[in-house]
Image 1 (cartoon, rainbow, N blue to C red):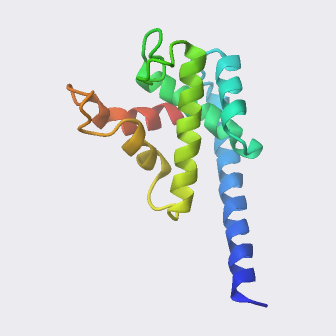
Image 2: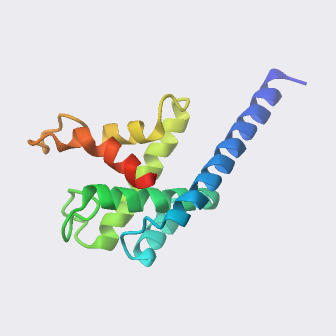
Image 3: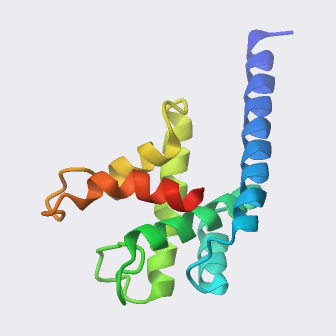
Length: 148
């Protein structure tokens, strides 16, 4: 058998292992009930923006954690600054899309480092011009605390 075949099999096993771990982790998170937003808003946003059905529970939990960490008022519930995201549903949709796209980027770059840290570099970069109080330095710790 070729090396390419073994690499494909190994990649599939890695993905399955990650999905199993995330599923186990999500069950634990759901048991802790960290929901903040309407379940329909989060579920709809994830269903529309995360094509991998087996990954949706993880991303629903992640969106709820981001919502709590951002703690934004109307039109900023998930910290999305684009004026087109005016409602909580639009905010959740942009958040879900951003999380999923960065998950794919993280995978393509070889899953180096922690996914939440990778996401933070784009979602809430430290030193960003729109963060004069340097609150983004707390984003990783805050999101992770709501995931626990």
